[in-house]
Image (cartoon, rainbow, N blue to C red):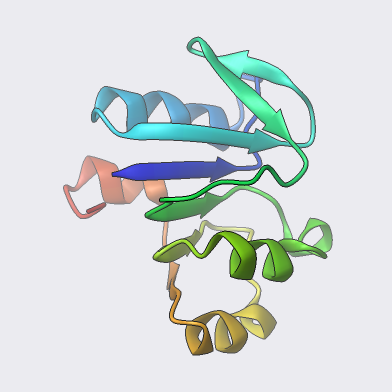
Length: 119
């Protein structure tokens, strides 16, 4: 399963970083996208809106105030689902995303992974 961590961070204290490490521990294939470049566990953090295909899940780690272009990007890359982690919830995007066939979940990626409910 190809997972995109949107809002990836090199800071070990950030939940995006913790999710990246746990997703890797669960053997998921990852793509990291963030506002700043860098790397986590040897994976580069891509900047901007890279052209990607085959994304099963996009897990969000950016607040609504930083989601201005998220809808257009999601409609372009068409992940199968988007997980809005705590603090990233944005109900104004749910309808357009669901209308495009993208499943929306308000959930915590870390909890889903720890409880075996991520897939």
